Amino acid sequence: MIVLRRVERSARADGAAKPFLKWAGGKRSLLPQILPHVPERFGTYHEPFLGGAALFFHLARTRAPFRARLSDTNARLVRTYLAVRDRVEEVIARLASYPHDPEFFAELRARDIDRGSDVEVAAWFVYLNHTGYNGLYRVNSRNRFNVPFGAYARPRYCNPALLRAVARALADAHIELGGFERVAARARRGDFVYFDPPYVPLTATSSFTAYTRDGFGQDDQERLRDVARALKCRGVRVLLSNSSAPVVHDLYRDGFELVTVAARRAVSCRAGGRGPVAELLIR
Ligand SMILES: C[S@@+](CC[C@H](N)C(=O)[O-])C[C@H]1O[C@@H](n2cnc3c(N)ncnc32)[C@H](O)[C@@H]1O
Picture 1 (cartoon, rainbow, N blue to C red):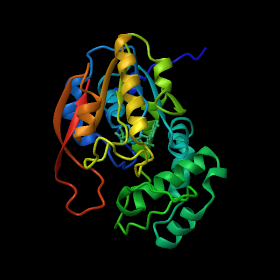
Picture 2 (picture 1 turned 90 degrees about the vertical axis):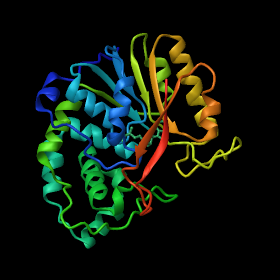
Picture 3 (picture 1 turned 135 degrees about the vertical axis):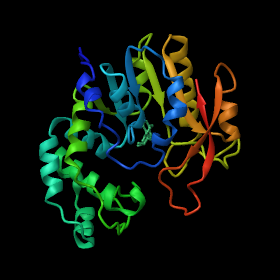
Picture 4 (picture 1 turned 135 degrees about the horizontal axis):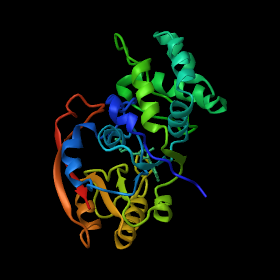
């Protein structure tokens, strides 16, 4: 049996834990609109589309102690969280040894990183995330990271105080690789699940293609809706984020409450892509 320990109160006392990765679709700027929908009390907190984990870190600062289960399908991302949780000093030492220059960036980017240890993966991930163009995570068909050098003056890829605060916040969290469906078997009455999937494209029609750029298509969106509905029926509190595409309104028309919020995009490749956009919170 897996025993879940609780996110330690020290994470709250420190007050510094926050996302240590830039993440497309990260929820930091939307937190004021999300927080009113977080239950006062919950059993275990589940975040199965982890990304930069903005809501988790906020709750770790303000609500600890609580039990947490965090997961994602990006193996390098999950290994990064595990290494920061369990071997943060080694991650920091490795990052401190990395120079900020385009040749090193190119050399690191080309490494066959999946053969490395979790510490090597974490340093690779954090470095490329902070020095690559716009904080993007993008891979080619062979899973090779292919974002170009970002040319920032002084990127803070080695931030020991932040990484240590993150390690404390994660200390007792259960972190695993896997799809969002797992939460269906794991969540219990009284738990709280925040689902922040790749969004339905705003331009999607009711027959939008099964393959989006994120590899999360219509079937996935429907399965997610079904998992959320089943959890609600079992007394699990759920909150979902998605775009305000008409398809999303259709998906969640029956049995869900939809709240429209205005979001600012944190990572965008388009110069004009940082203005407010309407999104949905669904519960
Ligand atoms: C919008 S991001 C989450 C952002 C995060 N909430 C934050 O604050 O930064 C979506 C995440 O879902 C993950 N993902 C994609 N497909 C998935 C699936 N089928 N199951 C679980 N996670 C998935 C991606 O790897 C990505 O990290």
